[in-house]
Image 1 (cartoon, rainbow over the protein chains, first blue to last red):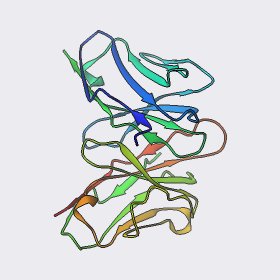
Image 2 (cartoon, one colour):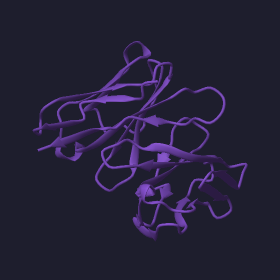
Image 3 (cartoon, one colour):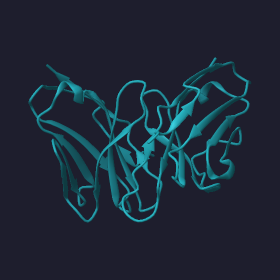
Image 4 (cartoon, chains in turn orange, brown):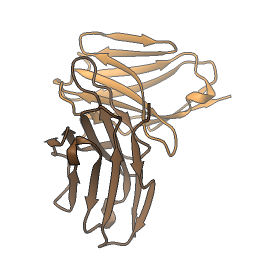
Length: 111
Length: 115
């Protein structure tokens, strides 16, 4: 049973526009969330995080929104750039050191 | 600062053979994790070391998998005997621990192909 779901396997966006990547979770005990970006043949690299005590965290072009009541988080990238093309994973933790990852969403930013 | 290093980057073995994957975490990181990604699926947790102790091995698929972390430094993950379904990319990650956000730093992965 998948506790972290990324229901869109892929997404294409024009350069300069907004990319919105979504993630749903089922476990109400999750209290810390991370987004990772992965290029081919590389390991995932950390992008941005959010704690359950917040509903928004921003870092440059990247913003993560958390809706606890809906058990939903989203990553917004504005403006999108071709170099953002990668697979994005969301991950959640119930306050332990163990993270549960989703299946990833492949983002393609078209020049 | 050196990142998380994994070796080999790719291993091709036949069913029934043995493979050992190695991970060198970032120096000073007490927490070391093994994850696995099978094609197109989630990055699945295998186990977590704190220093040399196994903190959580709930994700280990079965007793064909053995992980060790000698002296709390590098770690090895041995698969013996390998089966076809063990194919995938094995990622190692480390983190510092302590207070604050626990952000995992991943290695590039070891791709295992079992024929």
